[in-house]
Structure formats: C-alpha cells, structure tokens
Length: 227
Length: 285
Image 1 (cartoon, rainbow over the protein chains, first blue to last red):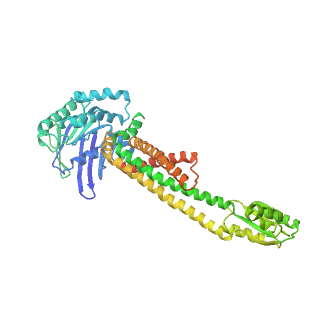
Image 2: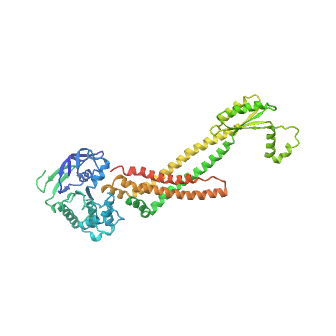
Image 3: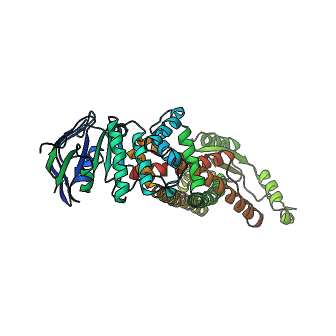
C-alpha cells in the first residue's frame, strides 16, 4: 500500500519540510494527517503522488518505489490514486459529467464504458441530478463532490484528499466528511489531510497521524495507541 | 485518437481570439519570410542569367592559318571548364554587327575591306564562371601567338561575383533571421495558449494522463495553425505579387512544389515550436 521509510524532504531554500517520517498505511484504512500549517502535510501528499521525491529514505506506493520509479511510470501510478484538493480544480468550461468523463478519457478508457461509469460515480456522491451543471452553477460542497467523483472514477485503491473541506463552511464540511466515510465503508482507503481538529472528532475510529515541524508527533492506529 | 483530434480542433472554438492571434502571427511571419524569399530568388535568377553570358572572346590576328585556329579550338574544347566553343569568322562578325547595329548599318556599307577580326568565343560551364576562373582561362588562351586580344568583361565579372556573394549572404543570414523570428513568434503564441491551459494540464497530470497524451493534441493544433497561417500568408503573398507584377516589375512566382513545401513547412514550424514549448511545460511531472 503506502509505506514511508525514514523519509526526509529538504528544500534548498526553506530547509526540511519532513524529517525521518515513517508509517505504513494498510488496505482500507481511514487515516487523518493533521498538524498546524507548515507542518509538512502537503509535502507528504506530494511525495505519495511522486510530484516530489524524498531527499532521504524511501516512499513506496502500490509497488512503485520513489528511488526506482521512472518518469514515464508515474501516470500509471497516478491512475491508482484518487486525488482531491482544497480548491476542487474542476475545468470551468465543462459540466460535472464532462469533468468526470475527462479523467476516464485521458487514461484511454473505452468510450462505451465512459457514460455508464460516470453516471454510477455521480450517483455514489449523490449528484445525479446535477450532471449537466457547470461548476459555476454548483455550490462549493457540490463542486467538491464532483471532484471526489472524478477521483473515484478510475477505481483507485486510495483516495488522497488535501484539505478537502478548507474552502467549505462547517456544515458542508461534515457532509463531505460523510462522503469520504461512505466511500471508506465500501473498502477504499482514505488519506485525508486536514488542520481542522473538529473533523477528527467526527470519526473516532480513524487513524490519526499528527505532524509538527516536519516530524510525526502522534500516530494512533484505530484511534488507540500512540505510535 | 477521437479524443486527440476533438481536443485539437476544439481549441478553435474555445478561444477564438487567441487562436486567431496565433494564426495571424504565423501568417505574418511566414509572409515576411516568403516575400524575402521571392525577392531573393528573383535577384538570384537575374544574376544567374547574367552569369550564363559570361564568356571569353579571343580575337585572332588577321590571316591566321585555319589549321592553327582549329588546333586551338580542339585544345580549348578539351578543357573541363569549357561548355562550348564557337568560331566567328570575319564575315560572320560583319553580318552580326550589321544585324545588331541596324540603325548604323550605313557605317558598314561600302566598306573596302572588312575591319572586324575573326574570333573564338568560349562559354564556360556553371561553377567555372567566377572572376578567377575566367581570368585563368583568358591567360591560357592568350598564350597562343596568333591571339591578338582577349576580352572577358573583367570588371563586370568581378561585380557579378560580388553581387552573387552578397545575395548568398543575404539569403542565408537574413533568411535565417526571418525564419528564427517566425519560429520564436510561433513559439510565443503557443506558450500563451499553454499558459491559458495550465490548469487543464495540471489536472491531466493528476489523473494520470501520459506525456504524449497531453502533448499530441497540442502538437496537432500547432501543426494545423501553421498550415492555416501558411495558407493565409500565401493569399497575402499572391496579392502582393500581382500588385508588383502589374505596377513594378515582372517576377517569377514560386513553383507549385515550392508552394506545397512552404505550406508544409508552416505546419512543421508550428508543430516543432509546440514541441519545444511543451518541453518546458511538461518538464516537471
């Protein structure tokens, strides 16, 4: 699954973003990565997507190792990850349905499979009735659901979400958390990065990895022991 | 493939202004280049036709033995630089003078003796027509004792040499500069297109599109813009040509093959500029 072994990430100008980080995410696990801003949360996500490579140690994701993966293998890795951002990152001139279909088209999915899959995924995030709306015609929560559907449509083994509720009001944030929990109940692993501690209380059984100044200061497994 | 071609031509509808701007840039760059090319090739053609007339003329002493003349002709004809050689007898020379100077034909009538000398005219092969080769040929022919005088238009052969060197230099340097400007202008407009689509490219990378998948429609788009720009440039060029032709001077237009090659070159320029620009945008993964 995802394995960090003594991972350091140092930037030339700003110094260490992560230091000696080790953890192992297992299949189907729901994990919060939390900590104050500047703790290294986003760097951790970028190491999983291999947008960044570690300065020391190794990151392993679904059979690919950070020290051995070739640039041309990265697209194949990304297809196995579903990625969701704080700012949704939808294409403004395409409808909800086209935004989701886009993720299938660019990975070369057979055209006849695209429509049924898109409709199924839209239903899974509760947006069947908004399929033909443009992002500008959707609320923030709805746009984030479209982004989640786009992340899901390629059947990834894990959903990575970097502050997915950061732009949403608290009530909508809880709705979105519920979507992630539902997805997790169906067996998909979720790694949700947030600085919002109230979310953690909403899912007491989730694992919490807490970062501070680039180091892991707490790692609970199943809401239990400190690791 | 359906996706690729749809995306490539979608651009025309999605951002018509930006597309029009880049096509106009390509058209103007290629137009400038082609006008220069046309002027240059016509100057070169004129210089070439002048060069074809380069010849060495050896005037013979009156009363030269015909056997000696034909020995000279055999020897000179065997030189590798020589294209053709002709003997102009005294009578031929007079007939020619009468024909060429018909307004003054009275001058040549009632002559007691023909004052014009017989001569041998030597035309040189292409590649042996510069000042140095011509001079060399003249020196060799002058060694025959019965050659009275040699003429080969020394100063205009040298001027022609200079003009041809200048024309080649301008063709290569100015043409190269125009081509480079065209390339940079095309690259710049494609860069704007790519910047306007950065979000889209970032999303494509995120959902696992391969580099070639992202690049392909953009390269096809660059090619298509290049072709459309080249056709536009051709329309402008044709208009300019017929204007010049009517009002100023008769020129030779590009051949159909050159036109097809030019349009393809426009497409190639668009595609290559896209690839070069894309490399920068797709460097980080």
